[in-house]
Length: 171
Image (cartoon, rainbow, N blue to C red):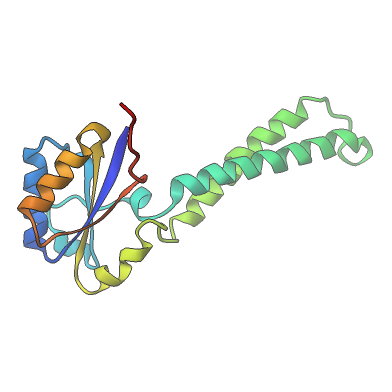
C-alpha cells in the first residue's frame, strides 16, 4: 500500500535536488512526478500523467456503475416490451449491462481528463506563480521516514499533505 506525498518546490534546481534525494532513498523513478505551469521547463524530470492531473480513475468507476444500472434498465425494457424490440431472450439483460458499463466508463474517463483533479486543484495558484508540485508515492511503512528526511534536508520545500490521509495503526 502506497501513500502520495505532495511538496511545493520554489524552482527547478530544488526539484532536481529533491529527485536526487528520493533516488538515494531508493524510491523508484516511476513513483516520482512533477507538475509545473511550463511542462517543458522540467527538462528530464518525470512529468505528471493524466491519472495524477485529473480524476480519470474515479470517473471511470462511476461511469462503470451508472452504465451498468442504465444497461440493466435498458435490458429489462427490451425484454419486457417484445412488440417494440422483437422477441429477445433473458440474456439481453447482462449483455446490455456489460455494454452500458464499458461504454459509460470509457466516456466518463475521456471527459474526466479535461477536468483537474480535486487533490491538486488547491495547488494551481502556486503553480501559476511558477512553483513546481512534486507528487511522490511512498510505501506506507516508509512514509514518515521519507517525509522527515526530505523536510530536514530541503527546508525550501513546502510539505502540503499526504493522500489518502494518514492513519494511525494500532500496535
